Amino acid sequence: MSAVANRLVVYYQTHYKNGAFVSPLPLIGYVTHLLLAAFHLNMGNVGPDIVHLNDFMPSDAYFAPMWPEIAMMQGNGTKVLGMLGGAAPGTYECLVDELFDVYYPPLKDVITDYNLDGMDLDVEQWVSPETIMRIILTLKADFGDDFIITLAPVASALTEGGNLSGFNYIELEAEAGHLIDFYNAQFYSGFGTFFPEDQYVDIIEYEQGIDPSRITATVLTNPQNGYGYVSVGHVAESIGHLMERYGTGWGGVGGWEYFNSLPDANEPWYWAQTMHQAMKVTKENIERKQREEKERKEKEEALEGRSDRETGTVKPPRVRSRFFKDVAVEA
Image 1: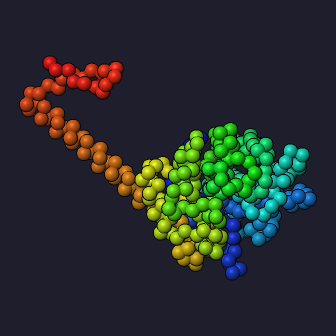
Image 2: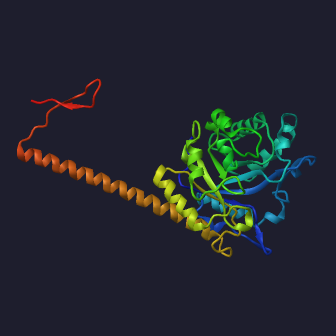
Image 3: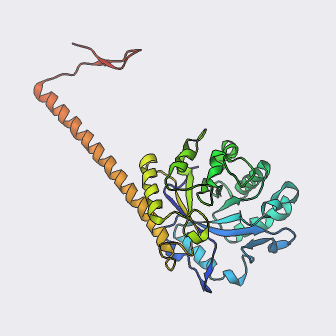
């Protein structure tokens, strides 16, 4: 399983602003993953009414403008995942063993009916390791290896610090990392910050480590969305530092949430465009430096070979010592 490098993940929870539908279409070409939030399971409800997208069933007329645009985004290459859970409690209580066969099937139906590409498991209540494993294994069994599964821990949980989920993410990674495409780590609300980027580095270097291609740094797009906002410029600066450190295969950045993203809340897609451009320019600069370094070495080798031919110099063979570096043997 290979995670998409330089991901740009945007959470799409608020679908109307001042009574007007907030279209996700301007994100096409910039966002790799749109996370449709937030799906909840409602204990005590029956049938299709078990699953709500925020306050309504997904089939409600409230979402009539949204679903065609979601399909258009998918048709243009954006992966659309459902975000399950979040701050509202109760969803994962419906998925314990004794209730799983009642509350999971309606969720499966929603994933199928709306052709979702994956699920982002945002666990912000105590959940047992056995429950989260069963959810992951069942989703993979039902929808196949190409179905994207991500988790959204607070950033500190990835170094066994503050954790809202109950289970241990380091232990989960060791047991089921091959089933988890990537983590959308929350670098805000007192659980982390993305500027400076030291905490991101700590996560990569912690114990067995998680490959940087599998860590999305999720940040707030507006200080109104929570505590710990980092400006667009500082996020872009950290992106540059991390790509220089980890290469062009670095994971990416995510934003909570879309509708009021700065620097212009009236044009919220500009945040995504800015992040996309930051990763694109940094990648191009890294690749240019790599090409220049390769060309420099090739020129040096060519000049060295030309000089040897002109002087008739024959380089002595080198033999490998058991205890020392290669040594030249005098002719």
